[in-house]
Length: 257
Image (tube, rainbow, N blue to C red; front, side):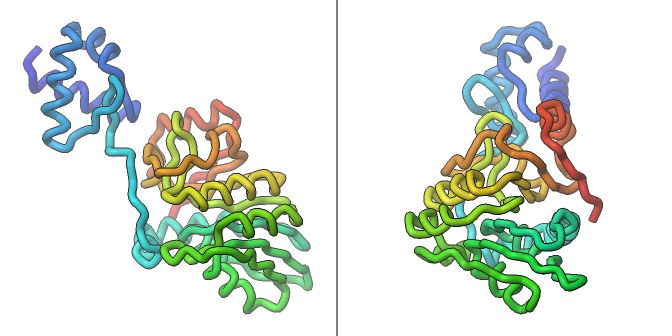
């Protein structure tokens, strides 16, 4: 087998599985692990893959904090569809918790009080509160604390203490990273702490994320994947991740923009 043939097979394995170990590739291609490591180095130099801890993964998983105004303009069609489907989970006279992030901001635009029902929303996100407070049938409880300019959300010990006085039927939460091994993550420590507190205060955790977040890792870990009840995402979710989540008993809703 030529080096080009090996590289083609390695790339196909990554496309199918998302990650593959050096040992696995060595056995599959019947070459030494030293040869595989050299192959992976060459492919990494071409930006085909990313090497990490004895394996190769499809993309560099590590992400940096970005301003909400930048993220708001990305994947807008997918986020709109995700928000629309998530809004259908809200019941009359419900009490829900909404975390911060651009995808939950799209959700807020799809929430409306109808038929004389009353909705209570607890949120740390200033932009979410701004949208929902315009609806007379929605009572918004704005969590206070330190305002993060990059996410337009309140964080900190005061925010978490205020949250201890409330509970919600559902938490709608966005993430910066969703990795099967590392779990759910965000780029900010205080944001991650608050998200964990929100999970404790909610009966059900619903994660809203476009498919670009899968396989990515933020600086601060929020929780294990198994602590999530439902994921709403778009059709770009890698097949191996979709199958893994469903095997774990997590409900996955795939929306079509």
